[in-house]
Amino acid sequence: MRLIVVRHGETNYNAQRRYTGQSDIPLNALGEGQANALRDCLATERLDVIVSSDLERTRVTAKIIARNHDLPLLEDRDLRELAFGEWEGYTYDEVRARDAEKVALWRTDPTENAPPGGETVTQLRDRCARALRRWQAQYPEASVLWVTHGGLIGVLLCHVLGLDLKRRWQFRHDNASISEMILRNDRIIIVRLNETAHIRALQVETD
Image (tube, rainbow, N blue to C red; front, top):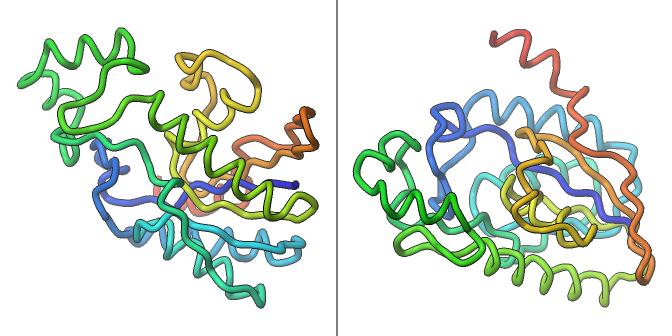
């Protein structure tokens, strides 16, 4: 399977550096522009399947991309972002001020410790792996596009490369970025990672 992985366009929570998690926050104006740039960038790509997480920011990004492809938009809840529970909607500094001990635990080992009411990074990895197995089994020779979230992309890369989940922060995944990999049985080939050339002009305009 050829897997192209796209992160959704920007939201206001992204711009304000707030934990978003599974809160259903829409794209902002820049995010819509980024989604249009993704559409143009991917217009000539061979795509057999387009799959989105079921949250609005990914669904809208995927719908815009799909305008150039005669394909239905499929949804998969397993492609959702990490659930941050009670921390969603707050900045890191706000969360640390009110929940310092739990923040310390989570930063020490997020694979075993979850935000209050949220999930661990291990739980995110498990559903990411489940989604990967499912789509690869259904479309082993296809070109599949996932429109998903930054946290899941980092965990996906650690999973397919056999890396410790604590190393997920070593992979950058900007809003509206494109990554790509080829999965052939036990062989994983990374083709591109955090490609953002298609949105650089938008970033310059807003700086």
